[in-house]
Length: 168
Image 1: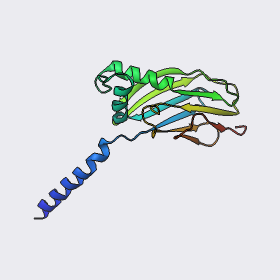
Image 2 (image 1 turned 180 degrees about the horizontal axis):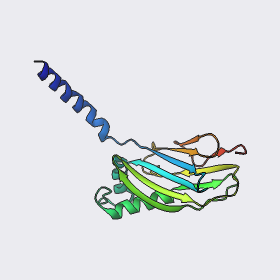
Image 3 (image 1 turned 90 degrees about the horizontal axis):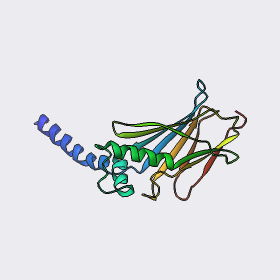
Image 4 (image 1 turned 90 degrees about the vertical axis):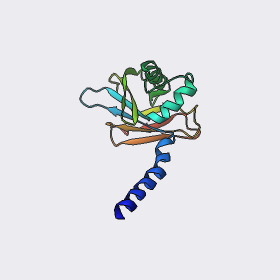
């Protein structure tokens, strides 16, 4: 009887939790890292594959398939690169180079980097990826390796957000 009840309970929990994984998260996290070893600025963007799957059909075409088509993955990575920018506190855009992308478990990662920059007093960030698809999309960007970790969150009407480095 205990085995039967435990089995029924596991089935109920599985059924109730399945919709959680099937829904779009509508969140992304990016990390801007000032690498002290190379002096480069390294950027990594993490998206839920489930969100990317739905987005590519709206952004590119209804036959886009991020799971099985390399062309779709490449196009999505290019889209991410075009919708994310950083600039110095004075507004001078910092050129970013595309490094690559990969699927890893539940996530789609996109990588970029910038050459070493002269001393920056701060950073201006624009992270619009998927925000035209879903107005409720939230993009969080963590800036690390230049003083304390700082976070900016793009939601609602946020377009460009900045951080100061306080002479670090």
